[in-house]
Image (cartoon, rainbow, N blue to C red; front, side, top):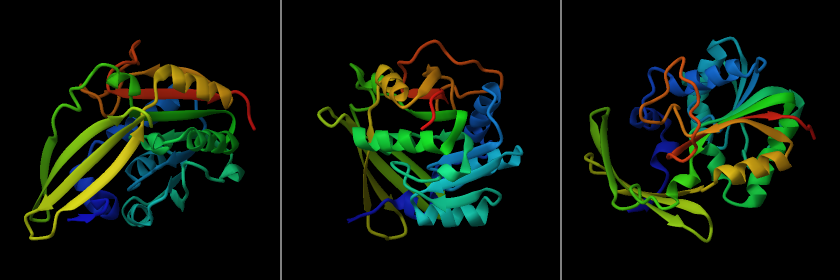
Length: 263
């Protein structure tokens, strides 16, 4: 067995595993930007394969997609053109000269900030990159969900899909590292093409709603909305016209914050 991030290393495989033909995540982000009056200059942090960045570009926005993976960026430039794509680490980046009207960070990318210093690096970079009054729109796992709930931890999750004639199967195990405040994931991939299994290890910071409000305020952001659904990864998923819930305890968390104090 070898260790690798099979999906990040193979962006086309990532899109096959997580199809989004309806561009639900991009549409949700665009709805948030319109609802709260964001200007046209948008930074997509952790843009991955570029699908959401390209959707936002298609609405008429000027979009820069940023990611740490050269494989993802190469795929985005080829398959989802329109935005400008740059390599950047969301835990600390310097794009301040662009003066964006909004920063978008979807699919738990913010939670790769595992430590307080990394979270401060992310929010400090956002503060410098955003124009006064700029928006931060984020979607992520919700740390509060794991307070007393174990249904995502009790047993491995088995999944599979077929891509280019090869059947891929994965077994995913989650566990909470309480001391580090991380949700750790181990995923083992197998394929019926004879290739050896691949083990992927990753982790997300478990942020709680009140904790997130506090650290945002420390960096000059006012929270406009913080809620559990509906969103692009909830059940049922978000649909046009849906309004935010008044709760914040399900497994996803959605954030809209405005920069009120620039760097």
